Image 1: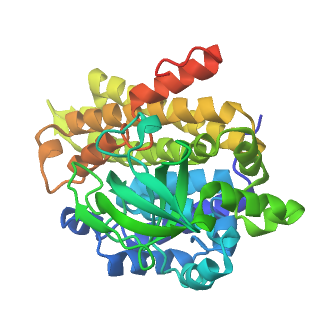
Image 2: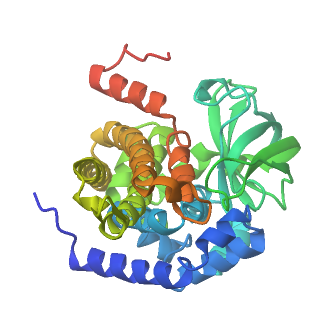
Length: 407
């Protein structure tokens, strides 16, 4: 078992870390406090990352989500500096994946946008009455000729207010089956409303409202996946996904497979937030003096630093273990990603809390980044599945069929 990154992974991490330190570390606290990014700001960020070879187009995504380990590194490094940026990539990639297997008409509009780093996507499933229980989606798709007519609403959707393309969860009124539709705002207009939250302040979040939106039937997920499967061996060339992830897409339910990578990424982002908090606490423990000596010499401070360090290392190992299972297409990817997401999120809250305690009164100051770390950490236990749901997913995968606690 090799715990070392490959040379490629080290170079990727180091170049990304240098970029984030130079480009965003100096501005993150001030800009994050100002609230959600505008679409223009989001595109500017996407373009800057694109220059590093990180993006949502086929070529860039192949070296990004196409390598689950690189995606995990990306999530940790960005989480360490500015978690609000993660949704531009983590949520944007979900509709972007299917563009290369869409109709020629869709590709003619979206591929140039992807290649120019001007594509902002979102994944729209959560509804006012269907949060964790996604089997009860009330957003409907009514078949009419060669189109679906979509009606309903979504809530707490990352990028909702600035997205041009969405992968939207719907219930087919004719069959009762639940599926996803690739929707473009300029073709199937929807309305949005901004929502505010405790952390990830710069990440736009909102509601989406669909009223008689017409969507071609060829934009339905099973059709898109069918187009991909028809490619045979060429599917790996067209879809920017790893062999392991493609295997998961064909052996698990599509939604279940799709969520493994974001959940592993959430764990790694939580590790990034916790690492930033830990480093701040470590430096402060060396410099701050009380009772005639640095507080780092006090036993209780050392105990807190120990707990923080062990928790981060444990979450990091679990997160990379989940990413490795996705690389191999192992069915344990579902369980491991759920465990990692849960443990990582809860860990980040505890670590940032202790970092604030070590700083004492300074830990409560809004001028310090610690309060942002704490707020961002609190976000990690809800999106992409709450901690409680991750425990139920784990329980089901351990016990097997017939033991679904929410069935």
